Length: 83
Image (cartoon, rainbow, N blue to C red; front, side, top):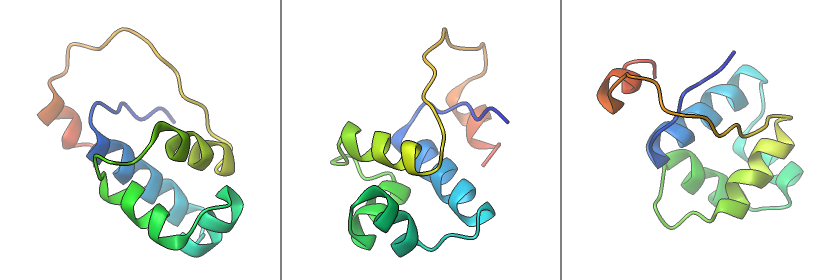
Protein backbone atom coordinates (compact mmCIF):
# COMPACT_ATOMS: atom_id res chain seq x y z
CA UNK A 1 0.00 0.00 0.00
CA UNK A 2 1.38 3.38 -0.98
CA UNK A 3 0.90 6.35 1.32
CA UNK A 4 1.45 9.81 -0.18
CA UNK A 5 3.21 12.10 2.29
CA UNK A 6 3.83 15.81 1.86
CA UNK A 7 4.32 17.05 5.39
CA UNK A 8 6.20 15.95 8.52
CA UNK A 9 2.84 15.41 10.23
CA UNK A 10 1.65 13.09 7.46
CA UNK A 11 4.93 11.14 7.64
CA UNK A 12 4.54 10.76 11.39
CA UNK A 13 0.92 9.64 11.03
CA UNK A 14 1.94 7.05 8.43
CA UNK A 15 4.75 5.69 10.62
CA UNK A 16 2.36 5.48 13.60
CA UNK A 17 -0.32 3.70 11.59
CA UNK A 18 2.13 1.13 10.21
CA UNK A 19 3.77 0.60 13.62
CA UNK A 20 0.38 -0.06 15.21
CA UNK A 21 -0.69 -2.37 12.36
CA UNK A 22 2.44 -4.41 13.07
CA UNK A 23 1.54 -4.41 16.77
CA UNK A 24 4.76 -2.69 17.84
CA UNK A 25 5.05 -0.27 20.72
CA UNK A 26 7.03 2.94 20.33
CA UNK A 27 9.71 1.38 22.54
CA UNK A 28 9.90 -1.74 20.36
CA UNK A 29 10.26 0.36 17.21
CA UNK A 30 12.83 2.50 18.99
CA UNK A 31 14.81 -0.61 19.93
CA UNK A 32 14.84 -1.68 16.28
CA UNK A 33 16.00 1.81 15.30
CA UNK A 34 18.58 1.99 18.11
CA UNK A 35 16.70 5.06 19.36
CA UNK A 36 14.74 6.06 22.44
CA UNK A 37 10.95 5.79 22.71
CA UNK A 38 10.85 9.59 22.98
CA UNK A 39 12.52 9.85 19.56
CA UNK A 40 9.81 7.66 18.02
CA UNK A 41 7.16 9.78 19.73
CA UNK A 42 8.63 12.97 18.25
CA UNK A 43 8.82 11.38 14.80
CA UNK A 44 5.19 10.28 14.96
CA UNK A 45 4.15 13.73 16.17
CA UNK A 46 5.73 15.25 13.05
CA UNK A 47 8.13 17.45 14.99
CA UNK A 48 9.99 19.71 12.61
CA UNK A 49 13.31 19.12 14.36
CA UNK A 50 13.30 15.40 13.49
CA UNK A 51 16.34 14.53 11.41
CA UNK A 52 16.11 12.71 8.11
CA UNK A 53 18.33 9.98 9.61
CA UNK A 54 15.65 9.23 12.21
CA UNK A 55 12.98 8.90 9.51
CA UNK A 56 15.24 6.61 7.48
CA UNK A 57 16.00 4.49 10.58
CA UNK A 58 12.25 4.08 11.17
CA UNK A 59 11.63 3.11 7.54
CA UNK A 60 14.39 0.51 7.70
CA UNK A 61 13.10 -0.87 11.01
CA UNK A 62 9.60 -1.22 9.51
CA UNK A 63 11.00 -2.72 6.27
CA UNK A 64 9.78 0.24 4.20
CA UNK A 65 11.43 2.40 1.57
CA UNK A 66 11.23 6.03 0.52
CA UNK A 67 10.24 6.67 -3.10
CA UNK A 68 10.70 10.10 -4.65
CA UNK A 69 8.33 10.83 -7.53
CA UNK A 70 6.51 13.78 -9.09
CA UNK A 71 3.56 15.01 -7.05
CA UNK A 72 0.03 13.97 -7.84
CA UNK A 73 -2.60 16.61 -8.52
CA UNK A 74 -4.10 16.21 -5.03
CA UNK A 75 -3.77 19.13 -2.63
CA UNK A 76 -2.09 18.57 0.76
CA UNK A 77 -5.39 18.90 2.64
CA UNK A 78 -6.96 16.26 0.38
CA UNK A 79 -4.10 13.89 1.22
CA UNK A 80 -4.58 14.74 4.92
CA UNK A 81 -8.04 13.16 4.65
CA UNK A 82 -6.33 9.79 4.05
CA UNK A 83 -5.07 9.88 7.63
